[in-house]
Image (cartoon, rainbow, N blue to C red; front, side, top):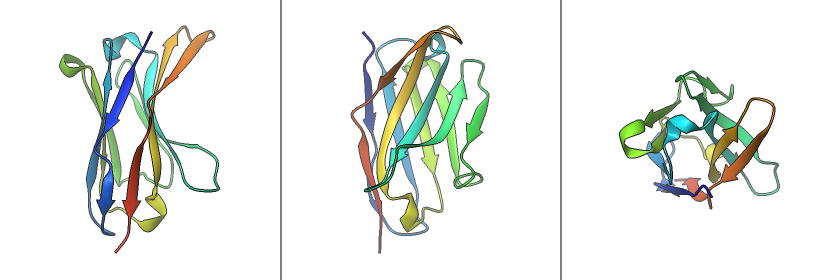
Length: 119
């Protein structure tokens, strides 16, 4: 069983920064990929950023140039550095990890952490 524990959310003013952390219960290099999703009230969950096992990162257009995803294998932790935050970034952010093969895999989710961008 895989456990993912997020931390780092909170209230920040527009233009500010936050760093989210996702601690995994196993080596992050064992996953096909890990990523961050978010869900705002009344909206569907959307992909924010993903990083593959070889370190390739992809981002949603809305966060490109502002957010950076990275991983620390020694700490089994994936981070999401969020800069130049906007009110529209307000959402619950979820950590995701995919385990298995490219065709057959299992998704694991963290419990979510609230990010609120407001003055």
